[in-house]
Image (cartoon, rainbow, N blue to C red):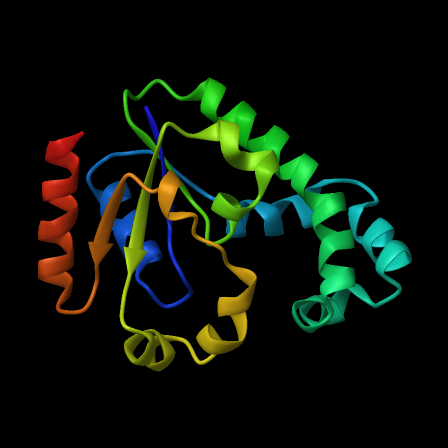
Length: 171
């Protein structure tokens, strides 16, 4: 079984995934794998610069330019989907996790998991954890019909871990 761990920026999904890894579960982190693809796929950075017409070092600009973000996604997502499919095929564990803030709202990813865990936190708390939370919220979409479980992360790490343990028991 593969579970997508998603949630808005600053919600604690990375903390949940680090805990799952500490318990021995494999976790595919879409953000770090995407960055690895930038470094390992020959010509990818050059293609991005050419098609987006911005220097790769200024890739952060796409978050305020929806057209360029869409172009970037069109270039990178097929590579990320293939990488994720290969990762999944190599897993021997009965339970694996995918961490992504945006995959739930992207149709090309929807076939890659069996269940969805949404990690949430109050907006003020998320903003205190990551100042970019408010800016990036509009880029994330959480179709509630696709969410199987929700963990509210609004207290201590110990309580968060207890909630993850309870979630694992339900699986």
